[in-house]
Image (cartoon, rainbow, N blue to C red; front, side, top):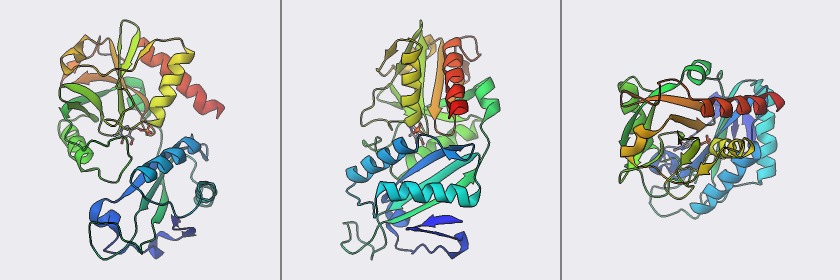
Length: 277
Ligand code: PLP
């Protein structure tokens, strides 16, 4: 069962036209919403970001966020999704191929469940990563369907046996291909400010509020590529990876090569959020 426009239908009944603009131009936006114990986690924050992405690309969401919220909850219930994600996307719609926006197209909402378990092994042991050039466009704050830059980077990481690729733009660490990146040095957390060069991650925001709760100082400043190995700890955040330690970058260990104490503290607080939720 999937959400298609404003109805729940069987996946086999869904019809995507060859001139759908998501398919031809990547002209659309998306969200990935985590489901724990059958309930969507930080759903309102995801829907607010969806609304912002829509506004930034001048796409009219075809019905209210309240209605979308209710349909997604119904989708979770009807499909019996307990642990996993809801993938949600909105295309600008179908029209004869032309770069300029069509007048007649109605944006198409689709959403479907992706059952998956939490990445326990990675969360416990940490992951290896590489760095790569950030070749993406200059509106990384929009969660758009144009993911070729991210896909190329992730593939490069996978081919080197790594979990994530960390982007470097003009010598500065921006974010991961599908995660936000944090460094810890001398008890202080450093991460790129939420501007046009990174996605304003929901999990990034959760991690920052947990840091505040734990009274860990935060510096919203990018770090230089050459300073990476001065860090004591490194971690990444995302809806699917939660708060995940990074223990190796380009084959070189971070700190002592084990998840660090500040990362661990944040992970424990995040676990509490999931349990309480
Ligand atoms: N940065 C990028 C480029 C992403 O694609 C994602 C998630 O897909 C994130 C960061 C993490 O965002 P969130 O925590 O909202 O999942």
